[in-house]
Image 1 (cartoon, protein in one colour):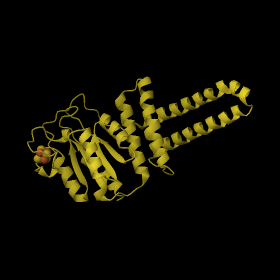
Image 2 (cartoon, helix red, strand yellow):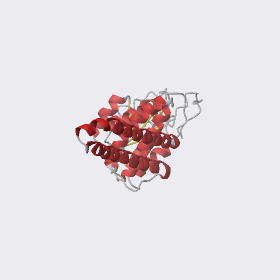
Image 3 (cartoon, rainbow, N blue to C red):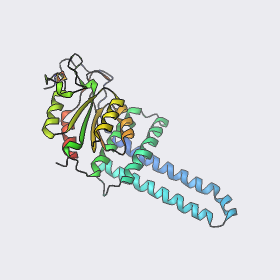
Image 4 (cartoon, rainbow, N blue to C red):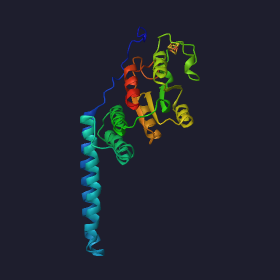
Length: 264
Ligand code: SF4
C-alpha cells in the first residue's frame, strides 16, 4: 500500500479533470471563427479576382467551403468523441488535424480568452487519450512502455531506480513497487525517467508501439506533441506536495490504460 502519512497536500496540487466542456466550447468557437475568417478571405479578394477571370471567385469559394466543411466535420467528430467517448470511425488524418492544428490553436485561443493554461493542457490530454482509444489497436505487451517521472519516488528513498527500476525493494513508501508489480503482471516495460531528454532517448532506443506516460499537464502536453505520431496514453500525476516532489499516480488508471491498449 502507498504510504500517504507524509503527504499533506498543497494549494499547488490540482485535481485532474478532463475538462470536456472546455473542449466543446473551444472547438465550437474555433470552427465558427475559422469559417467566418474563411468567408472574409473569400469575399474580400472576390472583386479583384473577378477582374482576372470571372470564374476565379467561384473556384476560391469552393476551396474555402471545402476547408470549412472539413473543419466543421472534424470538430463535430471530436465533440462527439468528447461527449460519447467514441466516434463512428478513426482516421490518422483526424489525429494529425487534432495534434498539429486544433490543439496548438486551442492553446493560442485559450491564451487570448485568458483560460488558465493548465485547463487547455488538461483538455489536450483528454482528447489525446480519446484519439488513442479510438485507434482501436491492440498492442503487444512487450511493445508497451510505462514511462514514469523520477519525482514519483519517495523523497528519502536511497535506492537508485532510474538506471534499473528492479532495484526497488517494494517497501510501499511510494508507488514504484506497485508499478513494478503491474509491469511484471502484464509483461510491459517500466522506466523511471529523470527528465524529458532521457525519456525521449528511452523511447528512441526501445522503439515501443505505444507509451503510457505519467507526468504533470505541462510535460504531458509537450511530450505528446514531440512523440507524435507515436500513440501516447497520458495520465496526469497526483501532486499532494506540489510539483516535482513525491508525486503520485492512480495505479488503477495505469492498470486500465494497460488493459485498454492491450485490448483486454
Ligand atoms: S517503493 Fe521502491 S522506490 Fe519507492 S521508496 Fe520503496 S524501495 Fe524506494
